[in-house]
Length: 493
View 1 (cartoon, helix red, strand yellow):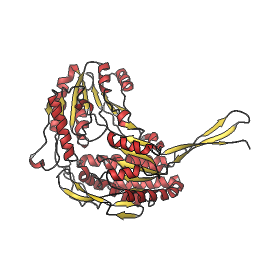
View 2 (cartoon, rainbow, N blue to C red):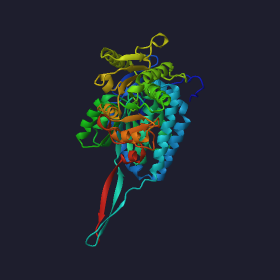
View 3 (cartoon, rainbow, N blue to C red):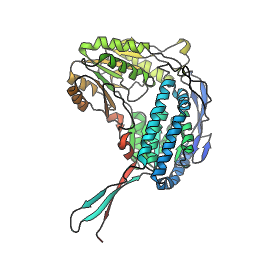
């Protein structure tokens, strides 16, 4: 195990990436994928890519384990999940180290994300033995009747997660599914396999029976086999809209429900009466300091009232330019690399198009070279005077690029904020409480954050509308995603 110092994450040995099927581990799949470290551009591991036969075996193991796990007393499921939370917390340094290797998450950010994952696991562990399994119903009439409802687990849940936050994505899905009595087959991205390996080890150490949680690494082939498997009764997916369309189409063949947590193009609306320094610090950090801009709920559109626009945009650019970009192993690094060369190409193309459309780059805008040239490093980039109809204003970048636009009044701000196909998160800065209430109600997003409050916490539901998905993770609503309801009625005799 590794220990984190105050200055730098130490060197560590990566775990062997294997398929975790029932009690077995397997180092080979249909083929392999060479994992590239985003910070160095160098290969550092070989990832087995599960094929359809591997996925079928994993699903059948989960299906066989379901009857045992469903019958396990809820208090025992709660104890196992509480132990899992403690084990993950004990391995904070290890998970942080794995995150830096998985996708280049800066070590300081990675440690905070482990803490968040622990809270999600503990939250759903707490619900496992407390959730009412139904409610009593009655019907007036001839003699009356007695009835009740039952909440019942689905069975095997297919969990498909993208590469940007593997541990927190697992923590948002798996504990809720297990607390409800389901079993899981998880398909983490081949781009970020390491965190799932340790997570699987700790689930077993926590006392969860073999087969209840399985891992099949791999890309489209494994994902397609998983979501289309007839024994998978529900799918929970985090990723992009294009993949979500394919998953939804596959699930429609057997009418299985699917929970979708997709992308976002979240607006951060700043009115002139806001605490402008606090708003500027928040705008810069949320756009760049959280996973280098590679997260779905980040405020990547900054909408600023006309009267303060120029000064405020300049201040945000000044703060962004002060952020250290560098090795994710160094604890004072704010921005690490993006995931791969494809991400660099996409970001460069979108910034170039914005320039062509007449936008001004206030800071950043060019891939970093020098000692960072071998990795996939792009600096915090603030782009002002972005055309409202442009690609940068409407499409997700998934990188450290902030699009700044101006608005004239409240109605204009709301219209601009609602002008994309996405509807995940919204952010609002104002000192006017009545305005805050009006704008919160008007924003077409699954969540709204007012004056810098924390978002995506375990206690509150988190989900989107439109191209940002459906359903919820977090809160009681997130647990209820993993039950179906049965209605029962009894006659008088």
